[in-house]
Length: 158
Length: 170
Image (tube, rainbow over all chains, first blue to last red):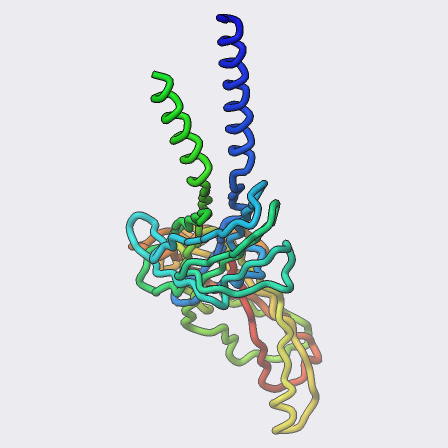
């Protein structure tokens, strides 16, 4: 009787382990592949990075084992880059933002980075690449130095 | 007890199943620098030069030549490049007639750091790298240009001109 009880408990634990393992393996894979860099910019000038530029930010997500899944992508975009003394405004645009199922410069679809980006009924192991450029205009009165900011991409199953 | 355990496991699994999300961060960077500007005062004018039976050299010291105030990013290094210039009297001959001729201007370039006066000058070599020193948030370097020309024995007369270009780049 005791052996039977232990056996059923053991099977139950194995079942739970397999279930958790399968569930975890079905998780979304989200990663950043490239940072957005304007390089060196002169005071008094503007600088733009397009989504096809090698210096554009590049993100990636994969649906893993999730089948027919709806995905919502949202961005937290910086309004300013800062050197901890001065702020430098930065703007993102639809023309400078694009996504694609393929890692190619052609065939991309533009999107508004300030609005949620929704993908419906994505199949298993669907890869989505997202590129983002931006524009900065550097005032002549601003201090020299390295200015930083952060783009956060949140990917959520809905 | 068993009921509580099952409830806990159920909640754990459902939370794992439905809380599927992820995020990634990308940094955004821009290196802001001051563009280079050069403010030139003075010119390199050798004045009247007499043609002599033998060739000779006429020189003008950098102090009495042209001064170039370079402004840019504080403490940044710049590369300075320049070349000899061919002067000609072509425009003068076209207007007044005579024989066309050329002369070569060989520049002599000095710098005085952040001092706008010609004090303790240092030689600037073509292709050399120099620093723009911070003066109240502006990187500065003063360049002084003089040089020499060789007047040949049979040098055609006329008004000789040419353009000396000095390049300063990060």
